[in-house]
Every structure is written in C-alpha cells, then in structure tokens.
Amino acid sequence: MARLSYNELKIGTIFVKDNAPYKVVESAFIRMQQRKPVMQLKIINLVSGKTQEYAAHQNEEFTEAEIEVMPVQFIYENRGEYWFNEKTNPKNRFQLSKDILGEAARFLKPNTELTAYQFDGKFINAELPIKMDLTVTEAPPAVKGNTAQGGTKLVTLETGAKVDVPLFVEEGDTVRVNTQTGDYIERVQG
Figure (tube, rainbow, N blue to C red):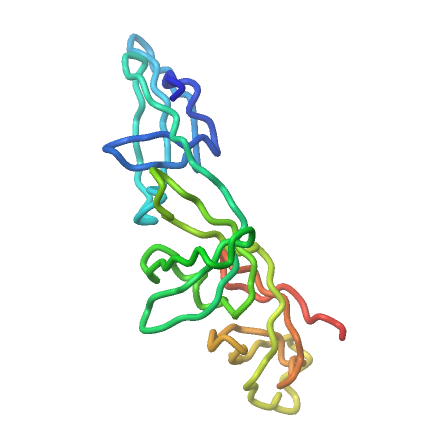
C-alpha cells in the first residue's frame, strides 16, 4: 500500500482513514501567516456515503486505499436491499442497502450497468451512470395556457422515481435524467 503525504490528497484520491476508504471530493491548499500549511478537504466515506470536512496537516501520513473497480449489473430490489451480479461472473451476486446507494437508487432498473467498488474483498458501493434514459409512466396533462411560461410538472418514471419535467412531456415519453442531482435533462427522441 502506497503512503501519501497531505499535499497528495487531490480530488479523486481514495485513502484509508479509521479503517474505512474515503474519497476526496474537494481539496484546497491553505497557508495562513505564521501557521503550518493545511490541506482543507471534503471527503466522502465510500462505505456509508456520508461526507465530512477534514483538515489534513503536513505531519500526517495517509495510506492509499486499494479499491478494486468492476462493472456490475443491477438485478432487482427487495425490501430496501439492491441485488447485483458481476458482469464477468454473473453467478457472483451481492447486495447493497439503500443507505449506501443513496438517492440515486430510485433510478435503478433491472439490467442497468453500474461501476462497483470493492474494499478488503467486500463490495462497498456502486455508482450509476450519471445520465440515464427512463420512460414516463404517469404524467398529468398540461393545463392549456401554462405552456408559454415554460412551467414544470411532476411525473412518475418507470422506476417509481418522481421528477419535475417541462409541461410538454407526456406519458410514454422517454426522458434523460441526471442520477446525481435527480434533475430532468431532456426528452429523448424515439
């Protein structure tokens, strides 16, 4: 395992802290007058999904986390447990809870390909593609006269997720959503 100094903790770096893997999502080098320099970080625990602020000092040493990244496929959800299998070995199945997957889990549909992370031989997380195309299963009709202002309405997608979309989107349309923000991006032409 590689050793890292505090100034090597850049965005995207994964290191071990308190026996858990953390990923750096924000990083800023701060040097104040007559004080030692600090690397101000925002880090996310890859097991729990919780983010926190952390100040890394020059006298600290960190260990780079050995994370195995592999393609997986979503199979099904049952009572808050999301089941996956490895793309290269479909017999190897594992489950992750909604707590770990976060809000993005509401966009999962069977056969979706994801990127999974393994730490110490255990699957700890899976990332959805940033953009996904989903079918609108329920959409209220646009009220005549509202379309000129470019308003929005709440629709239900095939996964059960609810998303705000422009008034012109109808039931049966396919829309592209950002799985990280939950925002509508565009209507997909079929």
